[in-house]
Structure formats: structure tokens, C-alpha cells
Amino acid sequence: NLSLRCAERVFIRLGYFPAHSFTELFDGTNALPWEEWIGREDAFPVKGHSIRSALTSVPDCQSIVKKAVVERLKRRYRVDWFRETGVKYQIEFFLFKDMAALMLDTSGTALHKRGYRPAAGAAPLRETLAAAIALTARPREDTLLWDPFCGSGTIAIEAAMIAANMAPGMNREFLSEDWKHLIPRKCWYDAMDEANDLVDLSVQTDIQGYDIDPQ
Image (tube, rainbow, N blue to C red; front, side):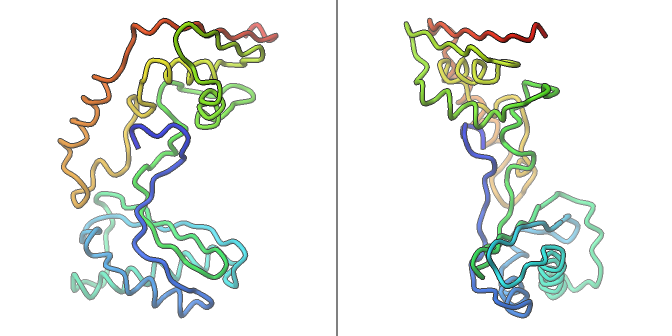
């Protein structure tokens, strides 16, 4: 999450199984060890996608997945109702060709939102795409990187971060920082300290951007 430049999200996949019907989707989801992650007070909203599958209704699939997780947690915690006021565990399902992947989203806000830009311009370019474009130019010392149609400068900014070896996630937070079952919070601090130590602000590179719009 901290260092990936071109990815949108990082998921933990808990299960992968055939789901030609709602029954198969329910049973497959219900069989997964959700209690190993989600606590009695935790929130666990569900969202997902369905592509080229028999189960085309995403809202119906959301309801089935939610019900399956609830029933599993009911047996574990011996309660009939969950307040969902605690730490958030975002459940995601992805149905593709009648195969279901059940995942937990560790990122939260999409990774293209780096945290250095409070608002997007009129025609924003996603920072992840800008980083991919910049990477093809291999930003490095003693080489000019020139963007003649730079807009708000996203490619130039990402190129500068690449040249300085600056981790793209240093200015933001991630959903899984509060997850007790993943890693201790100290590990996040250690990772940030390591990323800070790798930054090289002494790099001598020439990055230029121009645009016809004076704003």
C-alpha cells in the first residue's frame, strides 16, 4: 500500500469458489473464516462486481454475501444483531465467469489518491496512470523529462517522486492500519520510517511541464 505506484487497491483474498447460483454464493461465503478477521463490534459493509456471470444483479449478490457473513458471525459470537460501530472491514466480491473471489480491501481510499492534492483539476489524470506513464520515461539524473501538455502537473509530480525514490503513500492513511488481526500499528510506523530513509532529495534531475491554460 505504501510503495505501489500503479495499483488502485490491495486486497486479501479469503476465498475463491464457483458461484452459478445464489445458493452457491451463500454457501461458499458462509464457509470462510470471517471470525478470524471481523470482531463482534466491527463494521463489515459489502460491495462488488459481476462480469460475464449468471449472477448479474450486484445488489442481490451484496445481500447474499452480507447475509452469509452475518450468519457465520452469529454462530461465532452467539448474538442476533451486530452494531457495526467498530473498525471497518470492507468486504469485496468479484464474480467473473461464475467464479467468486471474496476479499477484504486493505487500502480504503483508492491508492491513486496520494494525499498531496486536495482537489482535482478540470480534466484530472489519475496519479496511478501518471506514474505508469512517467515510469516508461525512466526519470533519472542528467535527463530531461518534458510534458508539453501538463495540465495540473500530475505526470511531472509523479516523475519527481520516482526520481527522488519517494513512496507514493507517504502522505495518506490506509483502512487496514486499524486492523488488529493484520499487523501491529508499530509496523506501519516502521514502514513509514523506512520509506523516509529511502528518499533522496539530492537527486539532480530536470523535469519540466507546460500548458496552454494559464491556470
